[in-house]
Length: 332
Image (cartoon, rainbow, N blue to C red; front, top):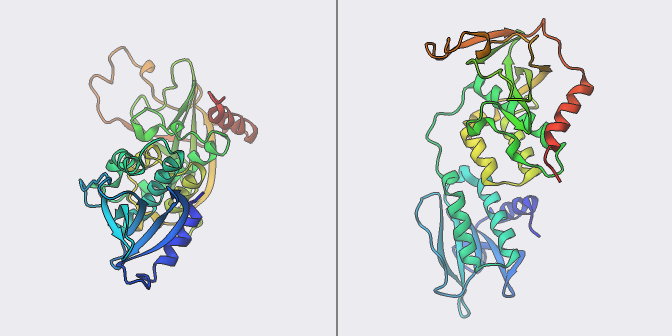
């Protein structure tokens, strides 16, 4: 069964250019087969990457609805030609996403429940939105620090979840808190520099879920050239934990991530991490502190700073208990 490391080794081997048979696509066979014919990886003279799935002539389900990744029919061979469903990636910055798309297609083809070319077309349709170049500007250093904090928390939670469920990372989906499962939620904040304050957005951000508990995870980061922590490395760790999936990439995209951007490799070191229980003793503003309708009905874009130093951080044992509870809640 082909995995991520095997894919990368194969792409490196193909990078030397077209094969000796004179075809414009150099190919390598994978373990997976369709009707005794090997599925191939390919690289053409322009550097585009290909997944080639053996398919009878005329049965390829083509898709040219975007420029980044397309499906077409390709014929390889001379005297005894073979036809393929050719899934081609034309955007180098999407190389990692394309790897995960390929692995998803291979997994579904192995299951053998549908025509292989139809499988490729259906999966590409599911991933289509994620294969369009992002329209927003890259994140700045402060925003990248915030994303580092969320990605590190996602890894910390998923390490404790045997099912590796990415749905616990809720912040990018528009939910009020960054992580939520069951009655427990975690809000993640990251600060640069020496201060022990963090900025809170709105009256609801530090309001606990109804009937549940809220925790604040605070990271103090330092920007360091060649630092050991960056977004690209953390994304790679998540991919290896759970495999690439639309759920992961949609969260990354909504969080402002752009593949292969310079901002991805901004280096940081995590100098400090503290956990706090957000309760009546924690410094905060919430709607219950005000008269009904005030100030939310008349005030917009409320932001304030919380001084964390006087607040009592949770001991390591209790932090472990919180993370494990959120990670395993609802797992069978």
